[in-house]
Amino acid sequence: MSAPRFAHKPSRTSQVAPKIPIVADDISNRGRRIERAIDRAAISTSVSKKSEELLAQYALDLENHMRVQECLADLSFHALRGMATDELYDKAVTLIGQAVRADYCRVLEVRKEKKLTEVAAYGSTPKCGLELLTLSLAEYSMSAVEPVMVSHLSSEARFEGKPMFDQFGLASAIAVKIGSPLNTVAILELFSGEVDAFTFEHADFAGTATNIIAAGIERCSAVEALRSAQSRLNDLISAGPCVIYALHVKGDALEPAIVGENILRVTGYSAREALRAEWWQEHAYPAEMLLAIADGSMARTGGQLIREYHLTRADGTTIWVRDEARLVAGSSDAPLEVVGTLSDFTEQKALEEQLRSAPRMENSGELASGFTHDLNNLLTVISGFTDLELYKENLEPRTREALEKISGAATGAIRLTDRFRAFWRSSGA
Image (cartoon, rainbow, N blue to C red; front, side):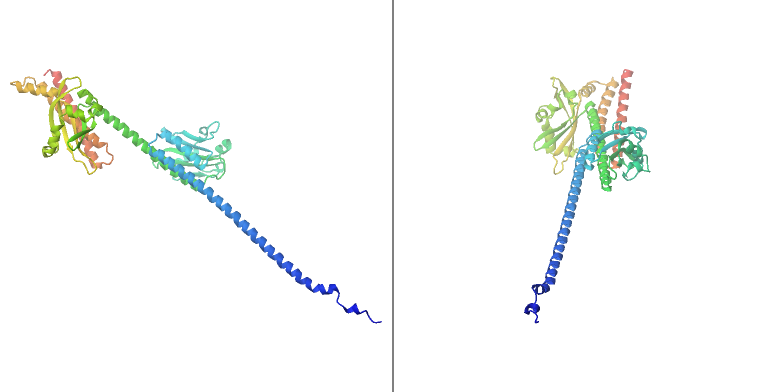
């Protein structure tokens, strides 16, 4: 029997079968491409996340840097102002504590016998106070050259730090000296409740901040010393017998710039009244001085002009005044100036008149009194101007030493004339 004709005809299955491997390869390739795309997307996402993390870290670092720089700028501003030491400490612990985000920041001042006392603090103060704890960290930092940084107070071996951790939960710290290497005036301490909260950058920042504080303290001391010296000098000038003045030469006029407060005692007019140009026109005959300046006669006498004239006091009485002036050449940006002294010369003038009319000197005591008074006035002027020079900060050491010797000699001579006058008065001469 013959087989059916369709027995050798390829089936539909046999016709499709050769195409299956091709389809499988295509699916596999597509799968690999999808996997690679997923991998690339994952890598891109990872890179993006890392970039975001880096950017976030950079932003955080920039914020910290700006906060630290702002702190140093503010601290420098207050230090340069000559702020009082206690106020500077209070301002410093607040600025520094906020800059490094410390849980607690304080300043311990070194007092007599190196006793440490807390004078300023910022942050949440412990209930019983850190002052009740051992001060071994501060004491250790006093002998250290660099800032002392503690990663974990509980395991610190250089000093006793465990009580701070056990009792108050303070885990890390920085301690820095304030002052020069040979003169520590205070200790700055920063505390945090976290372990390893501070870095070397924080320690460097704290060192810079303490240098600024030390400079501020030194400036404050210098300002206070200068104020004290100025006050003392003003007291001496006001108590002296001679009125110190300074006049600016402006064309054909004299403009008063400085007048001593003791002019009230000599003339009855206040310094404020004597600072008017009209006062000098009415009482001190400035035309004579201007003429001496203009015709060169004052220059020929070494820039010095000594005059004696009547001056009407505020109460209407008339006195003799001795006016000793010196011309000071001005620089390109400073006016020509006349500096001098006014003194009541009435008694001396009366003595001179008596000596002229008397055939012989019968009262040597009066002459001695007049002589010592004149000499005293001259010595006071020398002493006053010498002290004024000594208050200048940029003097050469040799110049300062010479001026101090002049001042001492003038002071000794004043005492000697006072003793001489007292002797004549006690002897009844």
